[in-house]
Amino acid sequence: MDVINRTQELKALFSYEHKVELEEKQLEILPYRFSQTMGAQDIECLLQIMPTPGFSKIPDNGIEENKNFNYLIFAPKRNEKHKDAILLLHGLNERSWEKYLTWAEYLAEHTGKAVILFPIAFHMNRTPLSWHQPRAILPWAQLRKEMIEDLNNSTFANAALSSRISDSPLRFYASGRETIYNLWQLTKEIKNGEHPLFAEDASVNIFAYSIGALISQVLLLANPEKLFDETKLFMFCGGSIFCKMNGNSKDIMDQEAFAKLQNYFQSDFLDPSKLPSVCKEDFLEEAFKAMIKQESMQHFRESFFQKACNRIRAISLKNDIVMPTQGIIQALGKRCADVVLKELDFPFEYSHQIPFPSNKKIEPGLVDSSFRDLFGRVASFL
Image 1 (tube, rainbow, N blue to C red):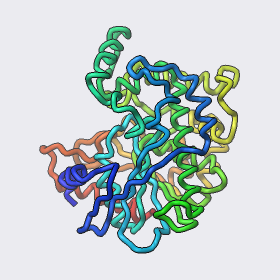
Image 2 (cartoon, rainbow, N blue to C red):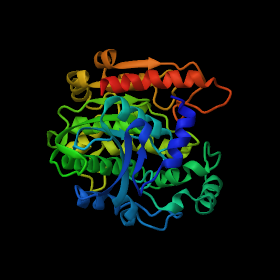
Image 3 (cartoon, one colour):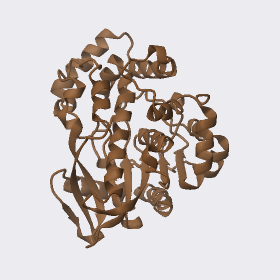
């Protein structure tokens, strides 16, 4: 596979609105509509306490794009309903599926399973268009630089997320909680035979990248309605304990926002007396708290991953400073990590955000072979 050229080909075909035929691969890309119902009241209570960002002028609970949206499925062509699904979860502060299109295509082609590209709350197409428009965001990015002395890594690309997190770090948890409700709802619809593409009781596995891995870990730990008892999880560049993550980056969030995020969740969020009254101490919250620090509910977390290690795999990258290997070991526990985790180091310059670069100075064959090696492992496991 020529990853660079194929990415551009798929980008040109991409649509949230209509079906796309990939004749040479015997695949099709199908759009579906999601309208959240599960946990709607809980989500509403959380979102209504969030301050409205100045650049948005729309309160979080009033953003309709986040409640009702389209998502895509890469599916092998067949007449009968599909019996297997793979959820593909993306990273933090993402607005485009571009880099994931070849990932989804490869997995659908080599596993024969339908791959669901599902957006995290307030990401991808679940936000107002103004959040992505320079004319709307640039003034706020500049204002943020003026208000915060020596602000590091402040850019147009991360201004919206940085402002939202700075205003209320709790948004990170609210977005994750909402996404888990959504995945719970979608999986239940699939297994109940209510989804038009899938047969009743179809299997649901997960390929998760970056922050999508944290969401997946919380989902498996919480295991709502025991829907994920048999779910396999493959994590790529993700799976770190929260306190070891480093989101201070020009394309994730600025230094001030990230510092507030870490400080809040390592202190106030772990103190029930400091949490807003709308926060519910339930199995979802407990599962997230177990992922914050190594010593937080360590026995619960590590014993779970140890028991589940036969259905979990993870690949980290040596030069990844956003989701470091050591953080993944702390999350899984050493006994589990020794079994499921492998650290790779690609023979070219890469980063967490761009593991398969399109830099013309890099020999394309090196990127292609590394891509095939990685996703060959993923497809074989899932």
